[in-house]
Length: 551
Image (tube, rainbow, N blue to C red; front, side, top):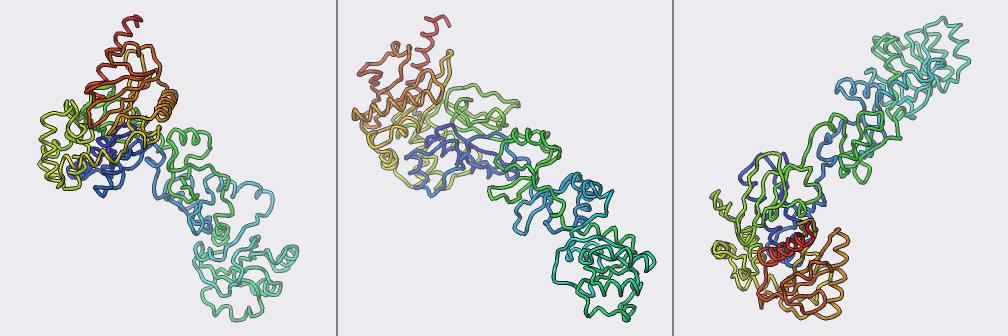
């Protein structure tokens, strides 16, 4: 079935993860024709890890990007043949299936190479025009291409040899065959006693009999001391010779120097590689070089886009990499409207409410579906996380009502569970600078300034000097890595409902209307919300800065 990824923003917080899981569950109940997969495009923070463990839920699938990949369009399973399959079968497969090449694998499905019309052409033409061709014969293929049966079979399965047809007078045949190596002769002959006795006497490698209606016709021949193989073909001499030449195993003519792609390769890379090869298809292998599929030029020209539902964001800068190549089906969000554009009308559910989990719960109720206990716990967790246990100024009356209903369904106490959730993150001093800055970092671009704001919750704003130095260094590192003009970190005390703001250097910093308590450090009393309290202020500062610079 068609896959749809339900995914939150980069550096996902608890609300993004929980709303993605819960909404994927809801969509799976409402739409049985698609597979809805909860996904994430970043690492989990400590709080989210705690919540998922508490709920007994595995983390959503990690998607580093949503660009189309080979796995999205390849043919699976591919048409493939074993390395010992006769050339006859390869030709039949290419003709019957209407394909240009056949991947060749060993017994364990490891790709050995390919056989295409190019290799077949080379097999029939090449240098065989001017000299007698030598074939690699596989006794196991005789029945496959000729039907028939063995009268005697040597132990050596594979051997190289030339086809010799016993259709000339005996003296001329004897003179002709006498110049050949008997170990390399595959004789095709009817019931011609003199020729057969001569072949037995010289121990030709193989004798293929034609025109034999029963073994009684061979009573006058003695194969007792003959060391080779005797096979009876039901076809006439000409057809037997033609088919026997096609009994060579595919391994004899395959191209081993073949380009391959992997399931995880980007479609753009496969397209470029395919354009540089004379073949019209490429085998797809896994990390162990086992064949898993095939991708053709016809596949490449088909339009494909991963289908996604975005939760807890609606801005390109916040979305998973490659979102511009995806087909967005829905957006569920409680933030300001961003810059994402869609080709077709979509379902967009947005409200100024405390969390995306609140919106998802409302959609459960709208569809008359009651979330189970686990889903209720996830939705409550995302709600309490984003509203700081209903203390954030973003909290609405709807959130409070929803939290009460979800707590009853989940069987937990709001205050006790909320406190337990936030305590799992520990104090600022107990976490790494990278985790503090990047676990919930969002990027914006307004008034020609690209900036980012991270947020970290704690139970105390007492930060050690050494830890503060580490945080500033990490903030500057993040600014450079993300190509930002300005980077900030809001550290919020959920107990006192106060915050401090740490920033990198930027001309706009002088316009901030907050109490400066240190170098690039500001005190924000009563501020808990990045979205509702800090971001509007930053946007006002940027607008004032733009006016001053006449941008």
